[in-house]
Image (cartoon, rainbow, N blue to C red; front, side):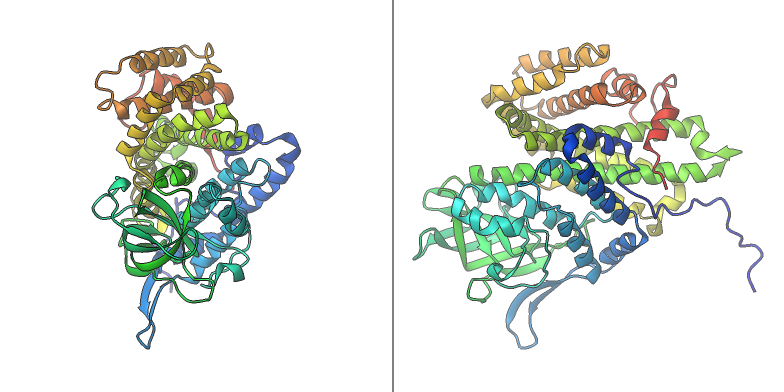
Length: 544
Protein backbone atom coordinates (compact mmCIF):
# COMPACT_ATOMS: atom_id res chain seq x y z
CA UNK A 1 0.00 0.00 0.00
CA UNK A 2 1.44 3.39 -1.01
CA UNK A 3 2.26 5.83 1.73
CA UNK A 4 -0.29 8.64 1.75
CA UNK A 5 2.31 11.14 2.91
CA UNK A 6 4.61 10.67 -0.07
CA UNK A 7 2.96 12.42 -2.99
CA UNK A 8 5.75 14.09 -4.96
CA UNK A 9 4.99 17.61 -6.12
CA UNK A 10 6.89 20.73 -7.17
CA UNK A 11 9.86 18.85 -8.58
CA UNK A 12 11.36 19.74 -11.95
CA UNK A 13 11.31 16.93 -14.52
CA UNK A 14 14.70 15.73 -15.74
CA UNK A 15 16.24 17.68 -18.58
CA UNK A 16 16.23 14.84 -21.08
CA UNK A 17 14.96 14.06 -24.57
CA UNK A 18 15.98 17.37 -26.14
CA UNK A 19 18.33 18.63 -28.84
CA UNK A 20 21.37 20.06 -27.06
CA UNK A 21 22.42 21.88 -30.23
CA UNK A 22 19.25 23.52 -31.52
CA UNK A 23 18.18 24.56 -28.00
CA UNK A 24 21.40 26.56 -27.60
CA UNK A 25 20.76 29.82 -29.42
CA UNK A 26 24.21 31.25 -28.75
CA UNK A 27 25.82 28.19 -30.33
CA UNK A 28 23.50 27.87 -33.32
CA UNK A 29 23.94 31.54 -34.16
CA UNK A 30 27.73 31.20 -33.91
CA UNK A 31 27.68 28.31 -36.36
CA UNK A 32 25.50 30.27 -38.76
CA UNK A 33 27.85 33.24 -38.84
CA UNK A 34 31.06 31.23 -39.16
CA UNK A 35 29.98 28.53 -41.66
CA UNK A 36 29.51 29.42 -45.33
CA UNK A 37 25.87 29.38 -46.50
CA UNK A 38 26.46 26.50 -48.87
CA UNK A 39 27.57 24.28 -45.99
CA UNK A 40 25.03 25.35 -43.40
CA UNK A 41 22.33 22.77 -44.09
CA UNK A 42 24.83 19.93 -43.85
CA UNK A 43 26.35 21.37 -40.67
CA UNK A 44 22.95 21.91 -39.05
CA UNK A 45 21.88 18.35 -39.84
CA UNK A 46 25.00 16.71 -38.40
CA UNK A 47 25.03 18.93 -35.30
CA UNK A 48 21.34 18.44 -34.63
CA UNK A 49 21.78 14.67 -34.85
CA UNK A 50 24.60 14.93 -32.35
CA UNK A 51 22.52 17.27 -30.20
CA UNK A 52 19.62 14.84 -30.05
CA UNK A 53 22.00 12.06 -29.10
CA UNK A 54 23.64 14.19 -26.38
CA UNK A 55 20.25 15.07 -24.90
CA UNK A 56 18.91 11.51 -24.99
CA UNK A 57 18.27 9.34 -21.96
CA UNK A 58 20.62 6.75 -23.44
CA UNK A 59 23.63 9.08 -23.64
CA UNK A 60 22.96 10.39 -20.15
CA UNK A 61 22.91 6.83 -18.85
CA UNK A 62 26.17 6.09 -20.66
CA UNK A 63 27.73 9.06 -18.92
CA UNK A 64 26.53 7.88 -15.53
CA UNK A 65 27.79 4.34 -16.08
CA UNK A 66 31.18 5.46 -17.39
CA UNK A 67 31.74 7.53 -14.25
CA UNK A 68 30.38 5.00 -11.78
CA UNK A 69 32.64 2.34 -13.33
CA UNK A 70 35.99 4.09 -13.83
CA UNK A 71 38.84 2.55 -15.85
CA UNK A 72 40.95 -0.21 -14.32
CA UNK A 73 44.62 -0.95 -14.93
CA UNK A 74 45.78 -4.49 -15.67
CA UNK A 75 49.58 -4.56 -15.64
CA UNK A 76 49.91 -8.36 -16.14
CA UNK A 77 47.91 -11.22 -17.59
CA UNK A 78 47.12 -14.39 -15.64
CA UNK A 79 50.47 -15.91 -16.57
CA UNK A 80 52.57 -13.00 -15.37
CA UNK A 81 53.21 -11.42 -18.77
CA UNK A 82 53.36 -7.64 -18.78
CA UNK A 83 50.41 -6.28 -20.80
CA UNK A 84 49.72 -2.77 -19.40
CA UNK A 85 46.10 -2.55 -20.50
CA UNK A 86 43.33 -0.27 -19.30
CA UNK A 87 39.83 -1.68 -19.14
CA UNK A 88 36.86 0.64 -19.63
CA UNK A 89 33.15 0.16 -19.09
CA UNK A 90 31.28 -0.48 -22.36
CA UNK A 91 29.52 2.85 -21.96
CA UNK A 92 32.85 4.63 -22.27
CA UNK A 93 33.46 2.96 -25.62
CA UNK A 94 29.95 3.88 -26.76
CA UNK A 95 30.53 7.54 -25.91
CA UNK A 96 33.99 7.62 -27.46
CA UNK A 97 32.86 5.73 -30.54
CA UNK A 98 29.95 8.08 -31.10
CA UNK A 99 32.29 11.05 -30.83
CA UNK A 100 34.66 9.59 -33.41
CA UNK A 101 31.92 8.64 -35.86
CA UNK A 102 30.47 12.15 -35.49
CA UNK A 103 33.69 13.70 -36.78
CA UNK A 104 35.13 15.05 -33.54
CA UNK A 105 38.63 14.00 -34.62
CA UNK A 106 38.16 15.21 -38.19
CA UNK A 107 38.59 18.97 -38.51
CA UNK A 108 41.71 19.56 -40.56
CA UNK A 109 40.64 18.38 -43.99
CA UNK A 110 37.02 19.39 -44.53
CA UNK A 111 35.39 22.79 -45.24
CA UNK A 112 34.59 24.74 -42.05
CA UNK A 113 35.95 21.70 -40.27
CA UNK A 114 37.13 23.48 -37.16
CA UNK A 115 33.89 25.35 -36.50
CA UNK A 116 31.79 22.27 -37.13
CA UNK A 117 34.02 20.16 -34.92
CA UNK A 118 34.16 22.83 -32.19
CA UNK A 119 30.37 23.06 -32.10
CA UNK A 120 30.12 19.26 -32.02
CA UNK A 121 32.71 19.01 -29.27
CA UNK A 122 30.79 21.59 -27.22
CA UNK A 123 27.56 19.65 -27.74
CA UNK A 124 28.86 16.12 -27.14
CA UNK A 125 30.91 17.09 -24.09
CA UNK A 126 27.61 17.91 -22.38
CA UNK A 127 26.71 14.22 -22.52
CA UNK A 128 29.90 13.28 -20.62
CA UNK A 129 33.15 15.28 -20.55
CA UNK A 130 35.75 12.65 -19.58
CA UNK A 131 35.99 10.93 -22.95
CA UNK A 132 36.73 14.28 -24.58
CA UNK A 133 40.40 13.85 -23.68
CA UNK A 134 41.30 11.23 -26.33
CA UNK A 135 39.07 13.00 -28.86
CA UNK A 136 40.99 16.20 -28.24
CA UNK A 137 44.45 14.63 -28.27
CA UNK A 138 43.75 12.74 -31.50
CA UNK A 139 42.44 15.86 -33.23
CA UNK A 140 45.36 17.96 -32.00
CA UNK A 141 48.10 15.53 -33.06
CA UNK A 142 47.60 16.33 -36.75
CA UNK A 143 49.46 19.68 -36.96
CA UNK A 144 52.44 18.31 -35.03
CA UNK A 145 52.76 15.33 -37.36
CA UNK A 146 52.56 17.60 -40.39
CA UNK A 147 56.07 18.79 -39.59
CA UNK A 148 57.14 15.41 -41.01
CA UNK A 149 55.34 14.77 -44.33
CA UNK A 150 56.12 11.04 -44.28
CA UNK A 151 54.67 10.58 -40.80
CA UNK A 152 51.66 12.71 -41.67
CA UNK A 153 50.95 10.62 -44.77
CA UNK A 154 51.09 7.46 -42.67
CA UNK A 155 49.09 8.58 -39.64
CA UNK A 156 46.80 11.48 -40.56
CA UNK A 157 44.19 9.44 -42.48
CA UNK A 158 43.79 7.20 -39.45
CA UNK A 159 43.71 10.08 -36.95
CA UNK A 160 40.94 11.82 -38.88
CA UNK A 161 39.04 8.62 -39.61
CA UNK A 162 35.42 8.41 -38.42
CA UNK A 163 35.73 4.71 -37.59
CA UNK A 164 36.36 3.67 -33.99
CA UNK A 165 38.07 0.39 -33.15
CA UNK A 166 38.99 -0.10 -29.52
CA UNK A 167 41.37 -3.07 -29.50
CA UNK A 168 45.17 -2.84 -29.47
CA UNK A 169 46.77 -3.91 -32.75
CA UNK A 170 49.28 -2.45 -35.22
CA UNK A 171 48.05 0.85 -36.57
CA UNK A 172 48.41 -0.47 -40.12
CA UNK A 173 45.68 -3.00 -39.34
CA UNK A 174 43.20 -0.44 -37.98
CA UNK A 175 40.90 1.88 -39.96
CA UNK A 176 41.18 4.57 -37.30
CA UNK A 177 43.45 5.34 -34.33
CA UNK A 178 43.54 7.46 -31.20
CA UNK A 179 46.48 9.46 -29.85
CA UNK A 180 47.59 10.55 -26.40
CA UNK A 181 50.35 12.84 -25.21
CA UNK A 182 53.14 12.68 -22.62
CA UNK A 183 54.99 15.89 -21.82
CA UNK A 184 55.30 16.52 -18.09
CA UNK A 185 57.60 14.77 -15.66
CA UNK A 186 57.81 14.67 -11.87
CA UNK A 187 60.72 17.05 -11.53
CA UNK A 188 59.59 19.63 -14.07
CA UNK A 189 55.85 19.83 -14.47
CA UNK A 190 55.08 22.63 -16.91
CA UNK A 191 58.80 23.33 -17.30
CA UNK A 192 59.21 20.66 -19.96
CA UNK A 193 62.79 21.75 -20.73
CA UNK A 194 63.67 20.15 -17.38
CA UNK A 195 62.63 16.74 -18.75
CA UNK A 196 65.11 13.91 -18.16
CA UNK A 197 63.74 11.19 -20.47
CA UNK A 198 66.60 10.23 -22.80
CA UNK A 199 66.43 9.41 -26.52
CA UNK A 200 69.19 7.36 -28.13
CA UNK A 201 69.26 6.92 -31.93
CA UNK A 202 69.21 3.39 -33.33
CA UNK A 203 69.62 1.81 -36.76
CA UNK A 204 66.97 3.35 -38.95
CA UNK A 205 66.69 7.01 -39.89
CA UNK A 206 64.67 8.84 -37.26
CA UNK A 207 64.39 5.80 -34.98
CA UNK A 208 65.24 6.11 -31.28
CA UNK A 209 64.95 4.23 -28.00
CA UNK A 210 63.53 6.17 -25.06
CA UNK A 211 64.35 5.72 -21.38
CA UNK A 212 62.58 7.69 -18.69
CA UNK A 213 59.18 8.46 -17.24
CA UNK A 214 56.11 10.64 -17.74
CA UNK A 215 54.26 11.90 -14.68
CA UNK A 216 51.09 12.61 -16.68
CA UNK A 217 50.37 10.60 -19.81
CA UNK A 218 46.93 11.21 -21.21
CA UNK A 219 44.72 8.48 -22.67
CA UNK A 220 47.11 5.54 -22.10
CA UNK A 221 44.87 3.13 -24.02
CA UNK A 222 45.61 5.02 -27.27
CA UNK A 223 47.36 3.68 -30.36
CA UNK A 224 50.13 6.27 -30.34
CA UNK A 225 51.59 9.09 -28.29
CA UNK A 226 53.49 12.28 -28.89
CA UNK A 227 56.13 12.70 -26.20
CA UNK A 228 59.13 14.88 -25.43
CA UNK A 229 62.61 13.53 -24.65
CA UNK A 230 66.20 14.77 -24.57
CA UNK A 231 68.23 13.88 -27.67
CA UNK A 232 71.80 14.91 -28.49
CA UNK A 233 70.67 18.31 -29.82
CA UNK A 234 68.19 18.95 -27.02
CA UNK A 235 64.50 18.47 -26.30
CA UNK A 236 62.85 16.64 -29.19
CA UNK A 237 59.37 15.40 -30.11
CA UNK A 238 58.77 11.68 -30.71
CA UNK A 239 55.95 9.43 -31.83
CA UNK A 240 55.62 6.34 -29.63
CA UNK A 241 53.35 3.62 -31.11
CA UNK A 242 51.62 1.38 -28.60
CA UNK A 243 51.91 -1.70 -30.81
CA UNK A 244 54.86 -2.18 -33.15
CA UNK A 245 54.47 -3.12 -36.81
CA UNK A 246 55.29 -6.77 -36.11
CA UNK A 247 52.43 -7.00 -33.61
CA UNK A 248 54.59 -6.96 -30.47
CA UNK A 249 53.90 -4.51 -27.68
CA UNK A 250 56.17 -1.53 -27.35
CA UNK A 251 57.69 -1.00 -23.89
CA UNK A 252 55.01 1.18 -22.33
CA UNK A 253 54.80 0.39 -18.64
CA UNK A 254 51.80 1.96 -17.00
CA UNK A 255 52.81 2.37 -13.36
CA UNK A 256 49.41 3.51 -12.11
CA UNK A 257 46.29 5.46 -13.04
CA UNK A 258 45.77 8.83 -11.40
CA UNK A 259 43.07 9.05 -8.73
CA UNK A 260 41.60 12.39 -9.82
CA UNK A 261 39.13 14.85 -8.34
CA UNK A 262 36.89 14.59 -11.40
CA UNK A 263 37.26 13.32 -14.96
CA UNK A 264 36.80 9.89 -13.43
CA UNK A 265 35.67 8.11 -16.57
CA UNK A 266 38.97 8.97 -18.27
CA UNK A 267 42.32 7.29 -17.62
CA UNK A 268 45.34 9.47 -16.87
CA UNK A 269 48.52 7.63 -16.06
CA UNK A 270 52.16 7.52 -15.08
CA UNK A 271 54.28 5.58 -17.56
CA UNK A 272 57.86 4.34 -17.77
CA UNK A 273 59.92 4.00 -20.95
CA UNK A 274 62.76 1.48 -20.93
CA UNK A 275 64.15 0.97 -24.42
CA UNK A 276 60.85 2.15 -25.89
CA UNK A 277 60.93 2.43 -29.68
CA UNK A 278 60.00 5.83 -31.12
CA UNK A 279 60.10 7.87 -34.31
CA UNK A 280 61.43 11.40 -34.27
CA UNK A 281 58.92 14.11 -35.24
CA UNK A 282 60.64 17.23 -36.55
CA UNK A 283 64.27 18.12 -35.96
CA UNK A 284 66.31 17.32 -32.89
CA UNK A 285 66.28 20.11 -30.35
CA UNK A 286 63.03 21.59 -31.67
CA UNK A 287 60.60 19.52 -29.65
CA UNK A 288 58.66 22.41 -28.13
CA UNK A 289 58.28 24.15 -31.48
CA UNK A 290 57.12 20.87 -33.05
CA UNK A 291 54.53 20.03 -30.43
CA UNK A 292 53.34 23.59 -29.76
CA UNK A 293 50.61 23.44 -32.42
CA UNK A 294 49.23 20.34 -30.74
CA UNK A 295 49.27 22.18 -27.42
CA UNK A 296 47.49 25.18 -28.94
CA UNK A 297 44.75 22.96 -30.38
CA UNK A 298 44.21 21.20 -27.07
CA UNK A 299 44.09 24.57 -25.31
CA UNK A 300 41.24 25.59 -27.59
CA UNK A 301 39.50 22.37 -26.59
CA UNK A 302 39.95 23.40 -22.95
CA UNK A 303 38.02 26.57 -23.81
CA UNK A 304 35.33 24.57 -25.60
CA UNK A 305 35.15 21.98 -22.83
CA UNK A 306 34.67 24.68 -20.21
CA UNK A 307 32.06 26.39 -22.37
CA UNK A 308 30.23 23.05 -22.58
CA UNK A 309 30.26 22.59 -18.81
CA UNK A 310 28.99 26.14 -18.35
CA UNK A 311 26.24 25.68 -20.89
CA UNK A 312 25.04 22.40 -19.40
CA UNK A 313 25.07 23.73 -15.84
CA UNK A 314 23.22 26.92 -16.84
CA UNK A 315 20.70 24.90 -18.87
CA UNK A 316 20.05 22.75 -15.81
CA UNK A 317 19.63 25.83 -13.58
CA UNK A 318 17.23 27.59 -15.96
CA UNK A 319 15.26 24.37 -16.55
CA UNK A 320 14.89 23.79 -12.82
CA UNK A 321 13.75 27.37 -12.27
CA UNK A 322 11.06 27.08 -14.93
CA UNK A 323 9.37 24.16 -13.16
CA UNK A 324 10.09 24.90 -9.51
CA UNK A 325 7.58 27.08 -7.64
CA UNK A 326 8.45 29.00 -4.50
CA UNK A 327 6.95 31.84 -2.51
CA UNK A 328 3.81 31.85 -4.62
CA UNK A 329 5.10 31.53 -8.17
CA UNK A 330 7.66 30.01 -10.59
CA UNK A 331 11.22 30.44 -9.41
CA UNK A 332 12.26 31.86 -12.78
CA UNK A 333 9.92 34.84 -12.29
CA UNK A 334 11.51 35.93 -9.02
CA UNK A 335 13.60 39.07 -9.66
CA UNK A 336 16.56 37.92 -7.59
CA UNK A 337 16.72 34.48 -9.20
CA UNK A 338 16.29 36.04 -12.61
CA UNK A 339 19.34 38.22 -11.92
CA UNK A 340 21.40 35.16 -10.99
CA UNK A 341 20.30 33.20 -14.05
CA UNK A 342 20.92 36.11 -16.40
CA UNK A 343 24.41 36.61 -14.98
CA UNK A 344 25.20 32.93 -15.47
CA UNK A 345 23.78 33.02 -19.00
CA UNK A 346 26.06 35.93 -19.90
CA UNK A 347 29.12 33.96 -18.78
CA UNK A 348 28.04 30.95 -20.81
CA UNK A 349 27.22 32.86 -23.99
CA UNK A 350 30.46 34.85 -23.88
CA UNK A 351 32.46 31.62 -23.56
CA UNK A 352 30.62 30.03 -26.49
CA UNK A 353 31.02 33.06 -28.74
CA UNK A 354 34.75 33.23 -28.01
CA UNK A 355 35.37 29.50 -28.50
CA UNK A 356 33.65 29.45 -31.90
CA UNK A 357 35.45 32.61 -33.02
CA UNK A 358 38.79 30.93 -32.31
CA UNK A 359 37.71 27.85 -34.25
CA UNK A 360 36.77 30.08 -37.19
CA UNK A 361 40.28 31.55 -37.12
CA UNK A 362 41.70 28.04 -37.54
CA UNK A 363 39.45 27.53 -40.57
CA UNK A 364 40.49 30.84 -42.16
CA UNK A 365 44.19 29.97 -41.69
CA UNK A 366 45.47 33.35 -42.88
CA UNK A 367 48.59 35.07 -41.56
CA UNK A 368 46.44 37.60 -39.69
CA UNK A 369 44.25 34.93 -38.12
CA UNK A 370 47.26 32.88 -37.05
CA UNK A 371 48.68 35.98 -35.37
CA UNK A 372 45.32 36.60 -33.71
CA UNK A 373 45.28 33.06 -32.31
CA UNK A 374 48.76 33.49 -30.86
CA UNK A 375 47.38 36.04 -28.40
CA UNK A 376 43.72 35.06 -28.21
CA UNK A 377 44.19 31.35 -27.39
CA UNK A 378 46.18 31.80 -24.16
CA UNK A 379 43.91 34.67 -23.09
CA UNK A 380 40.79 32.60 -23.73
CA UNK A 381 42.29 29.48 -22.15
CA UNK A 382 43.20 31.52 -19.07
CA UNK A 383 39.90 33.31 -18.59
CA UNK A 384 37.17 30.96 -19.79
CA UNK A 385 38.53 27.99 -17.86
CA UNK A 386 38.90 30.19 -14.75
CA UNK A 387 35.23 31.20 -14.99
CA UNK A 388 34.01 27.65 -15.33
CA UNK A 389 34.13 26.58 -11.67
CA UNK A 390 32.24 29.58 -10.20
CA UNK A 391 29.67 29.32 -12.99
CA UNK A 392 29.01 25.64 -12.36
CA UNK A 393 28.99 26.12 -8.57
CA UNK A 394 26.42 28.93 -8.76
CA UNK A 395 24.30 26.92 -11.18
CA UNK A 396 24.35 24.01 -8.76
CA UNK A 397 23.17 26.32 -6.00
CA UNK A 398 20.18 27.30 -8.13
CA UNK A 399 18.92 23.75 -7.63
CA UNK A 400 19.38 24.02 -3.87
CA UNK A 401 19.84 20.75 -2.03
CA UNK A 402 18.68 18.85 -5.11
CA UNK A 403 21.79 20.08 -6.92
CA UNK A 404 24.09 18.78 -4.20
CA UNK A 405 23.12 15.13 -4.65
CA UNK A 406 24.75 12.91 -7.26
CA UNK A 407 21.48 12.01 -9.00
CA UNK A 408 21.16 15.56 -10.30
CA UNK A 409 24.40 15.28 -12.27
CA UNK A 410 25.55 18.64 -10.96
CA UNK A 411 28.27 17.32 -8.60
CA UNK A 412 29.92 15.57 -11.53
CA UNK A 413 29.94 18.84 -13.47
CA UNK A 414 31.41 20.65 -10.48
CA UNK A 415 34.19 18.09 -10.00
CA UNK A 416 35.03 18.41 -13.69
CA UNK A 417 34.98 22.20 -13.73
CA UNK A 418 38.58 22.97 -12.53
CA UNK A 419 40.17 20.52 -14.95
CA UNK A 420 40.51 22.65 -18.07
CA UNK A 421 42.18 25.43 -16.13
CA UNK A 422 44.92 22.99 -15.06
CA UNK A 423 45.44 20.76 -18.11
CA UNK A 424 47.55 21.98 -21.02
CA UNK A 425 49.16 24.67 -18.88
CA UNK A 426 47.58 26.24 -15.81
CA UNK A 427 46.79 29.93 -15.33
CA UNK A 428 50.32 31.26 -14.88
CA UNK A 429 51.58 29.33 -17.89
CA UNK A 430 48.87 30.92 -20.06
CA UNK A 431 49.64 34.39 -18.74
CA UNK A 432 53.37 33.94 -19.44
CA UNK A 433 52.63 32.61 -22.93
CA UNK A 434 50.49 35.67 -23.58
CA UNK A 435 53.28 37.98 -22.39
CA UNK A 436 55.75 36.26 -24.71
CA UNK A 437 53.42 36.86 -27.64
CA UNK A 438 53.09 40.54 -26.70
CA UNK A 439 56.84 40.99 -26.40
CA UNK A 440 58.05 38.92 -29.36
CA UNK A 441 55.25 39.06 -31.91
CA UNK A 442 53.90 42.57 -32.47
CA UNK A 443 51.70 41.24 -35.26
CA UNK A 444 49.71 39.28 -32.62
CA UNK A 445 48.72 42.47 -30.80
CA UNK A 446 47.95 44.19 -34.11
CA UNK A 447 45.64 41.33 -35.11
CA UNK A 448 43.90 41.44 -31.74
CA UNK A 449 43.39 45.21 -31.95
CA UNK A 450 41.99 44.89 -35.47
CA UNK A 451 39.55 42.27 -34.22
CA UNK A 452 38.20 44.26 -31.26
CA UNK A 453 38.34 47.44 -33.34
CA UNK A 454 35.55 46.07 -35.52
CA UNK A 455 33.16 46.79 -32.64
CA UNK A 456 34.48 50.25 -31.79
CA UNK A 457 31.86 52.95 -31.48
CA UNK A 458 29.02 50.50 -30.78
CA UNK A 459 29.26 50.66 -26.96
CA UNK A 460 30.96 53.38 -24.93
CA UNK A 461 31.94 50.93 -22.17
CA UNK A 462 33.73 48.70 -24.66
CA UNK A 463 35.50 51.73 -26.14
CA UNK A 464 36.66 52.79 -22.68
CA UNK A 465 37.85 49.25 -21.89
CA UNK A 466 39.91 49.12 -25.09
CA UNK A 467 41.47 52.49 -24.23
CA UNK A 468 42.32 51.34 -20.69
CA UNK A 469 43.84 48.12 -22.04
CA UNK A 470 46.08 50.07 -24.43
CA UNK A 471 47.26 52.18 -21.50
CA UNK A 472 48.16 49.04 -19.58
CA UNK A 473 49.99 47.56 -22.54
CA UNK A 474 52.06 50.72 -22.92
CA UNK A 475 53.51 50.26 -19.43
CA UNK A 476 56.02 47.41 -19.34
CA UNK A 477 57.11 47.91 -15.71
CA UNK A 478 56.34 44.83 -13.63
CA UNK A 479 54.59 43.25 -16.59
CA UNK A 480 55.11 39.66 -15.42
CA UNK A 481 53.38 40.35 -12.12
CA UNK A 482 50.51 41.87 -14.13
CA UNK A 483 50.28 38.90 -16.47
CA UNK A 484 47.03 37.54 -15.13
CA UNK A 485 45.42 40.96 -15.10
CA UNK A 486 46.36 41.50 -18.74
CA UNK A 487 45.09 38.06 -19.77
CA UNK A 488 41.78 38.76 -18.04
CA UNK A 489 41.35 42.18 -19.60
CA UNK A 490 42.26 40.96 -23.07
CA UNK A 491 39.76 38.10 -22.82
CA UNK A 492 36.97 40.33 -21.50
CA UNK A 493 37.52 43.00 -24.15
CA UNK A 494 37.50 40.32 -26.83
CA UNK A 495 34.32 38.73 -25.45
CA UNK A 496 32.67 42.13 -25.20
CA UNK A 497 33.55 42.99 -28.79
CA UNK A 498 32.11 39.72 -30.07
CA UNK A 499 28.85 40.14 -28.15
CA UNK A 500 28.48 43.78 -29.21
CA UNK A 501 28.80 42.72 -32.83
CA UNK A 502 26.69 39.59 -32.79
CA UNK A 503 24.56 39.06 -29.68
CA UNK A 504 21.11 40.60 -29.04
CA UNK A 505 21.28 44.09 -27.48
CA UNK A 506 20.05 42.88 -24.10
CA UNK A 507 22.96 40.42 -23.89
CA UNK A 508 25.71 42.80 -25.03
CA UNK A 509 24.32 45.62 -22.87
CA UNK A 510 24.35 43.46 -19.75
CA UNK A 511 27.83 42.11 -20.48
CA UNK A 512 29.36 45.52 -21.12
CA UNK A 513 27.65 47.08 -18.11
CA UNK A 514 28.93 44.38 -15.76
CA UNK A 515 32.18 42.94 -17.11
CA UNK A 516 33.52 46.10 -18.77
CA UNK A 517 31.63 49.00 -17.16
CA UNK A 518 32.16 47.96 -13.56
CA UNK A 519 28.45 47.95 -12.61
CA UNK A 520 28.73 44.52 -11.04
CA UNK A 521 29.39 42.93 -7.68
CA UNK A 522 31.76 40.12 -6.77
CA UNK A 523 29.21 37.30 -7.01
CA UNK A 524 26.70 36.19 -9.63
CA UNK A 525 23.29 37.86 -9.38
CA UNK A 526 24.62 41.40 -8.99
CA UNK A 527 23.72 42.79 -12.41
CA UNK A 528 22.08 46.24 -12.64
CA UNK A 529 18.36 45.72 -12.08
CA UNK A 530 17.46 48.10 -14.91
CA UNK A 531 18.66 45.68 -17.59
CA UNK A 532 16.38 43.42 -19.64
CA UNK A 533 17.25 40.34 -17.61
CA UNK A 534 14.13 38.36 -18.52
CA UNK A 535 15.14 38.31 -22.19
CA UNK A 536 18.66 37.19 -21.31
CA UNK A 537 17.28 34.28 -19.26
CA UNK A 538 14.73 33.28 -21.89
CA UNK A 539 17.47 33.13 -24.51
CA UNK A 540 19.40 30.65 -22.33
CA UNK A 541 16.39 28.41 -21.70
CA UNK A 542 16.84 24.90 -23.15
CA UNK A 543 13.87 23.85 -25.26
CA UNK A 544 12.48 20.44 -24.36
